[in-house]
Image (cartoon, rainbow, N blue to C red; front, side, top):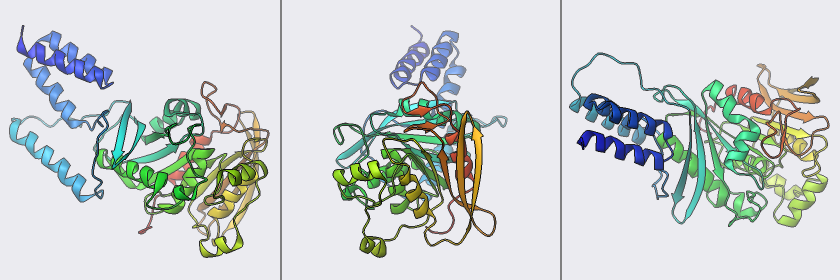
Length: 381
């Protein structure tokens, strides 16, 4: 049997096991065509794409910037040494992909999926960390929020970590435990490390990294905004709770039911919330997380800021809404609160095929991307 044919079919099998069915199909077609040139070009194209390994492995963290740039430069130099001069070609374009992988850091590991939109992978793109709610998983969350559709139109990478039921039986992020509310430990540290890992393996605009979530994921997004402000430029909280509001499961259940802020005056004085650009969505008939919690998240986002509040009433997708916006003197929106009239505990403007999704409301995914796009990170923190 032709050795080139054998090699291409072996590559196709490996790509199939890795979940890259489009690449596998191309490899089979190249093998059947029987041309050595096609096989060589397919191999070069595969080397040009950044593909995260599916197997779990421990990867040492390193700062984004010099290390990543030198790594890319060394691969480019190797190709130039072995390839003969040829006419200038258009850049290799990413195909739309939804990659599954596992990230390991020390003894901790986490499964995740990464949405990669079509486009030029050499151009830095924004990255959104999306945190699902209880009982959800990345696939369900991506479908229900329609975030991949919006990301495709705007050329964003979207990262969906999956909470293990070994760490929480309901698959909830442990936002209500003090051990998971601080920088450098617990789930915030792991999620930040995962975000850096993806940034190291894909061209990401470090000034445009954002985080959003639903319910428990929204509460953890608020925690990440407070603990890693140098990483996340802005925050989106849908049907969630404010950062550091509770310290135990009983306190969490009480605040979810009543919306009463249980944070003590002493605690608020010693560690007041850090203002960070935040967009909040909450249904007025949310029976799982009281709507007052959305008000608290919004209040934290504008703590200590000087701005003018604007109130707008409108209707979109079959539901009325009230939109509060705190605007700076230069016209920038510092924070937004969308109260969706009659909506329950569900993602506004979502896809009914996903869980906890309300297709009738305003498009939360689209509004979040619009808000995030207007808030790149500035300065050192």
